Length: 395
Image (cartoon, rainbow, N blue to C red; front, side):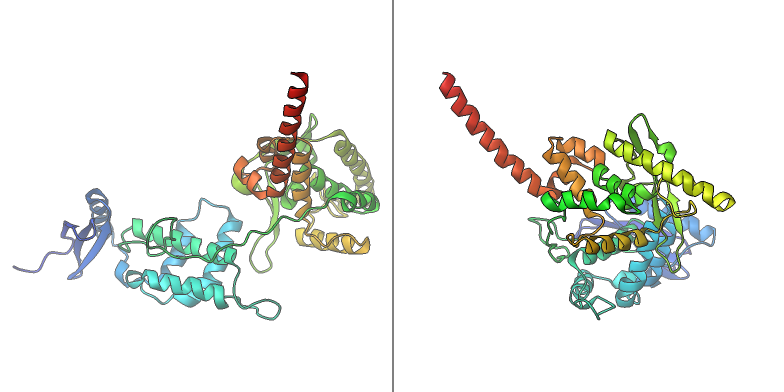
């Protein structure tokens, strides 16, 4: 039998694995594509033939992991936010390529991925001066998720037979074992500390901002992106966020997305609206003093010239404020957790709190604020017991 012609292909079933493979002759060499069904490999074979005709075929068997990751993040993640893509690039460049970048895609196996995960957890941290040498379980999981997504795309295109990075599922054999994430209890202000905070903040330059975070549960970036036009009919429209590009010397920008891409409209109580109205009067005076130097961004929370506030600087200012008044050393995000706690304690349903905070589900809300749901269950048990006693007395 003579040599097969360039572009000639065959399809057959791999009975030992239950998958299918397509072979095609390219440059005198036989190349193989894999898939779960006959139709899937036929589609890949047809695509390879078309690319051969257009001189655009990429040799999959010679592709290295690093080469594919760069192509994947630049080509197949265009649907996600720029800030998220930049974070993907950072993780790829900092953690994945140094460890797996030179490996050939076709030869990558589950053992390679497991060693990669173990290494990150044991000694993945680049800056070891002030922290343990290993990455946190959550950071390791994030890096693994990026790698797994990229390899899933490679599998769908026929570059590899099977994605070796799928994590182990409960009660299933095989898969990558990820380090266990230890859930931390959320930070909140409560009792006397919460009351002291509300008193101390009255004379602070960021009074309106901090109280907005505390009483509405907005995220920092969402609050810093608010414009005066977002407030109407005693509600606040939340559909954007301010963030700094996660690249060197990245600029501040307002993007038309919130976390989870869930725009929402939340109620504002009268005390918060009064605080914001006072803040607007003070801001108007600053605008008059600045004159032509004022940036007409219509931002509710801005710097002395109407420009965007730096999120990092706001958080550092918050830390100094807490220290000055001997308040608990918490993160600015703890004001959001405090708001959620106050909502649940006041009787709001988990579904209402979910919608106000912009969580993806009420289940996530309940899981995050377990300390409140446990208190609610105890209170519920006490109410049921009191109801029984009252019923028996009446009967």
